[in-house]
Length: 366
Image 1: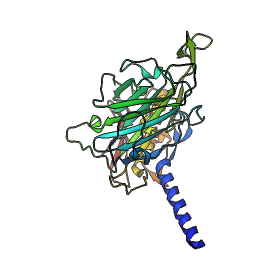
Image 2: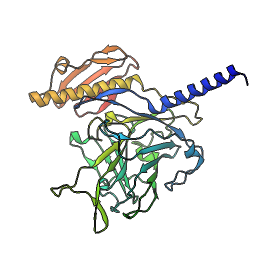
Image 3: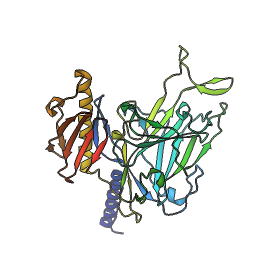
Image 4: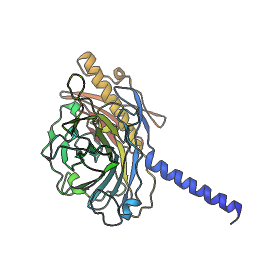
């Protein structure tokens, strides 16, 4: 092979790897409200599963081997590197969305066995999904090393005094845990535990007529790993207590950083794009309308701050002191006050849709 041909091939390989890397891991940087911490929203491409998947906690099938791992988790505030590594993979087909996560862990333990108990009182892995990205009506799944599930549905984030449907069930969900080591044995050192989950797409449908094919759509998604320091009581693992006898604070390690210790901020979750069945498309660019939505949340937070300071809602956009810039284009929000609150709307120059955020943080697109 000629030298020039060799260089050409290597350039093509490097370019391809760079494009794939960007398509899986890159997204956009925003400023987290309340803290002014700069965070980067993550993005991941979930490819179509061409083959059968057995839910056993191992992900040994060829289709899993072809799926890309996410990057390693980071501390929820986006500042510190966690003590132990965590990463995930995703796939999808017409029936299920599949998740596989690998959690490095020298001491695998768990005590909670009852479904819908507060699973994060053990070390756990958590999945958060807002399918339509409206900031409301989202799903949370928590699973510990005993494969105990807590599945719940939230109508709004907790900041809006939400109703949590703890008795909601993701009917048909399948999960399994594999432990590379020994469970609840403090006398040895473990390597990791892994979890495999298949969630039926139909559990996310809000109407009978809604389509189930996810191809070329995207969801707002995030993942969290809750990790506790431990102590041994009579040879059994329990959460570590401080000098005052109180349970020491947990660690929160996540895929897409939140900028603050609070997972219930769907506007700062990452993006999962579902590739076409043929697998040809390998990139995902966050739509420009999404960037308008980020700015609407800036205005939402500014209104909340204004109310806290003045005990009333602002009646003028100027009072909020938020400049809306998207792709170097300044947009003009419209603030409407009414008897039960307010709306702030922006007409998108990209899609011509009217994007609106309400006083309770719900995004509406028409």
